[in-house]
Amino acid sequence: MIGVGKIKQYSNVLDKPLNKGKQEVSLSAFAFLFSELVQYNQTQVDNIAELERRLEDAGYAVGARVLELLCHRERGNRRETRLLGILSFVHSTVWKILFGKVADSLEKGTEHEDEYMISEKELLVNRFISIPKDMGTFNCGAFVAGIVRGVLDGSGFPAVVTAHFVPMEGQQRPRTTILIKFAEEVLRREARLGG
Amino acid sequence: MIVCVAIVGHQNNPLYIQSFTDGDDALKLHHVVHCSLDVVDERVNNPKKSGPMLNETYLGLLYPTENYKVYGYLTNTKVKFISVTTDLDVKDADVRNFFRKFHAAYVDAVSNPFHVPGKKITSKTFAERISTIVKAFGLSSAG
Image (cartoon, rainbow over all chains, first blue to last red; front, side, top):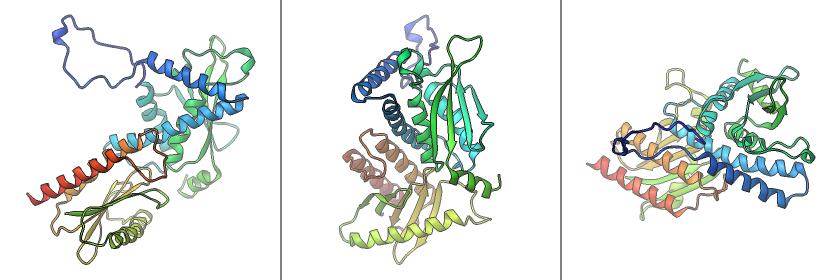
């Protein structure tokens, strides 16, 4: 988990329990590493789309491994075969293990049958990043979109996942939405399974 | 005594095969593993109504051959673990325990950022861990 902050304060250092260590990574360490990742990729590419693709590929590798890890840790886990099942799995379990909390909301898209959205008021990876005006609609949440794509792909739900900013009235920073568009075969399978 | 373990990916591509006896022909064991893949697919596609609940990871005894028993385990990402053993009286709990440790070692090997998913697992640490687990299984079931 990144950046889970609440540490219980002990009055006496001898009272601290001897445990195997926190299962957390410091937020600053991750922010530093992520900024280096973005900067490194920025020097290698010529345009924004390529940068987004690279961040997404990096996230994809993480997603595949997170899926393996979660499937092993969750004892008695059932393999998700239904669409809603895998979406709630991503929305709660994956988010909890990565960011220490569940995602803010999960919605079904209104225009198309195959679109779903996970939204977050402030993505953890974007917390220390501000996008310059000339980069347009680039969103470093492409990394998180890659993670989601990795998890979905590994579970047998091929999808196209992208990250978008959605401006909200009354708030300075826009909300981030991860848009998940499932492939044709997923919808067909879902219909066949009795959706 | 476990004579062979294998990890097969979700497109039935082999990710890791290791045999632990010198005597038997390694090729024959590979063939046994290959045949057991069909049994796994059959179990996955036609779940028995009265059998274990759907989506259970441990598949149990796949099929007994002349002098081997083949056990299977299926992870959530459709990666299959196969173990071939020559014991006649292995306890179910022992095999489940073995697969649990095996799964832990596999997750650690896959978390390696240099590992390409879909390619064979080439990590030496992983190979050593697997041989330790196999030896521990041999000792626990004999004792």
